[in-house]
Length: 134
Image 1 (spheres, rainbow, N blue to C red):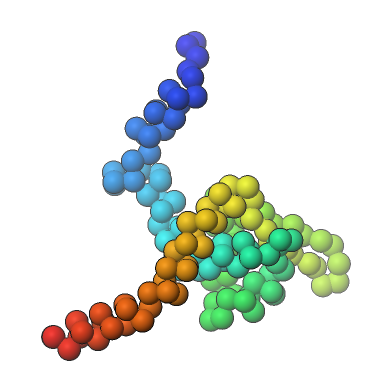
Image 2: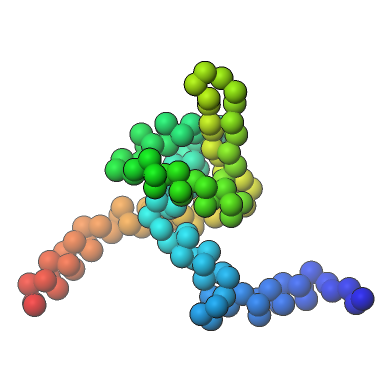
């Protein structure tokens, strides 16, 4: 069996995972990351050094339903972006924090959040102008 170098493995990965291809697994990951709740969960967890309890996340993310938050956290845990820690107590304590992989995604997520917050006025003006034409 031939061994491959790190650069060869990286090149192979680039060929295997092309998000422009319909069946590419990386497209599924982009779909996940593009979800508003995923972005907000990652940003909220990124602001916390020690992670957050489920109830703290729920309060931080105004408007998220219990079902959607649970589904989002499970998906992020499955993808290796979030770690879940259960502490036996009454009531049971469940904490979430970013994994190293999740932290590696934090910079672009926080940049996207900051961009949206900084440019919302321009987007609203563009929407008004567009709607006025039609």
